[in-house]
Length: 529
Ligand SMILES: *Cc1c(COP(=O)(O)O)cnc(C)c1O
Image (tube, rainbow, N blue to C red; front, side, top):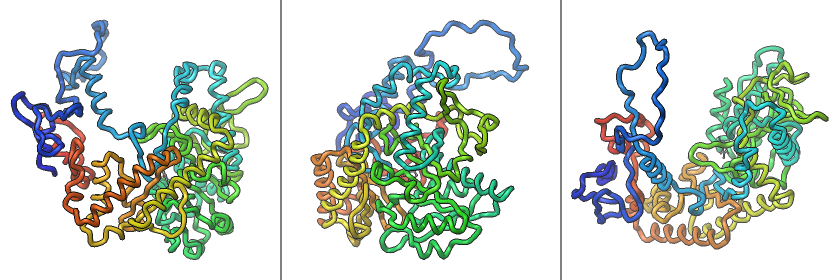
């Protein structure tokens, strides 16, 4: 949409000036100081250049029967330095937790201690192969087993499935275990059709229920931002398979009625799924098992500080109650006097009735090592303090902003604070504009328009790893932006971001009509914007 950016798509011949992101400054290539423009890999194609010299392939018998390609497939070529520069430049276009405060609510973008990285690079872990004989990976299996033990301790649950590769994958694991338990109880396919999900839920909750073949029945939130227990109990019937509740919930609030909800759902024969993505707010302080839940995924990449963003990898182990434990997916680690071993097949599972397998091999080993190192370095008291500090920091930010912004709910929050857009009313500035203006100030925006139950939501999760000084810097920037709103500078907000490599994008077109394939003729930047 922004007028100038089309010209920035690729290097231009020398001599032709290109408008750069800082309005009014033009440069030959579109580079600006040390911030470099970067064309697509296909556009830097340097045909014939090679990063490695491979020996000519030995002549082998052709068994393709005439189906072999007759033309080149058109992969770009580049030399090793060209490739290194391309990907290094691209990497520098990312905002990262290592660059500054990253207050993206619900995502827990906290510092990843370098000790974790050092441990995961120990060659005994870094060079493992999942098909190695068990006798050669005893240490790795012990680590998985010990991590599993600690997760059970921290949650007060008797079993854990370690293999899910992310939170959403853990949800799939939990709901598949629920379905397997119901099928087993009913001696065939369960007739229970509904899963109850609060209207404030993360999108992965209803998506998981739907993928598993259940109908999603939304429960309204009450005026306190919590599950409306009356509305919930009115929906209960013997066709309910279960409920999925996030605690602390996506409004950053503790669900106070968990025990009552557990009793009610169990009374009608359903199961209680808890979305544990926000476990960092209660780790070491509340054991979800004591609240009566049947399963919960834990995002190791949130609570236990393994790197995330940009699509992974994550790890989403699922703790399970006595009722669901028999249905946990393979594989799992067992040990006896002879050492550690993996149970890989249902036939070796004894009494258990695993619903199947969710993932090739044994889980995200690199994430296990990092989470293990994090737990070991924090200890019992340190993990408790993680939760306390996460909650303290969020309440500090809330207290520093509540007089100029509008908190969505009264009272203190847990690990994230939620504002709505009432403070922007009649200003001509939207939540989106406000978030874009934060980018110009060098901050990743807070989560916007989520949870859906709050109008124009802005969800701020500072995490426990920000110092008071960093929080004060963040608060002062947000307050200064609010002052600009009050001063009537809506045009400046509508024009933000002004200092990024690309300006305001047409996000709807990008989402609805993404152009995923490069062809020499299509002006790609124009198409994406
Ligand atoms: C992050 C998150 C998820 C999904 O976790 P992924 O690891 O991104 O799949 C689910 N629910 C809530 C509340 C979350 O914050």
